[in-house]
Image (cartoon, rainbow, N blue to C red; front, side, top):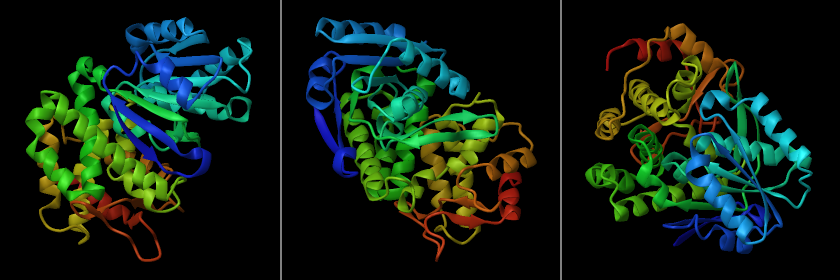
Length: 366
C-alpha cells in the first residue's frame, strides 16, 4: 500500500491510500483514520451491488452500526432532489454528529455524498472510497462537493475535505472501457498542467495502461494523486493556482450540461482539452505543436475529440453560466506548453478569452 499525504493543513490534511485489496481492509483502515460507531455508506445503483453490500457486511462484522443508502447511477441524478432524499434518510436514522459518511463509487457518488456530509448537521466527517479511475486520481481529492442545477454543473456545493481516501486498485479490473478512458483524460490533464515527464510517460506507456498492467496503473495513479494533492495543498478553495485543474473543463462542462449529461465527464474534458489547447495556440499563449501532442495522446486512449451536435450559441451560453466566468467574461485555464500553465498579469491562473475567439475555435476544423 502506498500513502500520499494531502497537506491542506491542520485537520483538513489527510492520507490518500493506494493499493490492492483495500476494501477488505476498510474496517481496520477506518479504525485508524476515521473511527466511529456509526457509518453511512452512500453508493449508486451500479456500485452498491458489486461492492456496497460486502463493505457494509465487513463493517457490521467489526461491530459498527452501518447503513447503506443508494441512488440511481448517473450524473443526471446528482441533483438537489437526490441530496435532499439522502439527507432525509440520515435524519430518519438518527445519525448524530459522530456519524461518518462513506462515499463508495465514482465521481458522482463522491460529489453527492460529500455534499450530504458537508451540509448534514452543518458538517460531519466523511471518507472517500473511489471505485473509478477518474475518482481515484482526481475527484476524490481536494474536498470539492456539490450537485448540479439545470443551468450548469456543480453550481451548488461546498469545500469539505475527507478524513481519508481509500483507493483499491482492484476495482479497476472490472471498470468498463469507456469509464477507464474517461479517467485517463484526467491523468493526461495532470501531465499537461504540471509534469511534462509524466505526460511523456503516458505517451510511452499507453499500451500497458490500456491493458491495465498492475505496475503501470499503480505508478500512474500515484503520480496523478501527487499532482492533484500538491495543487490543492497550495490553494484549498480555488482562489489561485488550483484553477489550473480546470484545463479542459470550461468547454467540457458546457458539453456535459447541454447533452443532458449523456457524455461522461472525462470524455467531455478530453474534447475540452483538445479545443482549449487549440485556442491557446491561436491566442499565442501555447507553443506550436502543443495542441497536436495533446490530441494524439487522447486518441491513443480511445477518447473522441469531436464536438457533439450542439449549436455553438448553446455551448457558449452554457459557458457563461460556468462558475469560473466573471462579469460575463469567459475565463479559461490554458497551457503555454506541456507541463506548464499560463498566468495572466493581474488576472491569475484563469485567462480571459474573447467570445469571438471561442466561437472561431468551436466552428473551425481541427
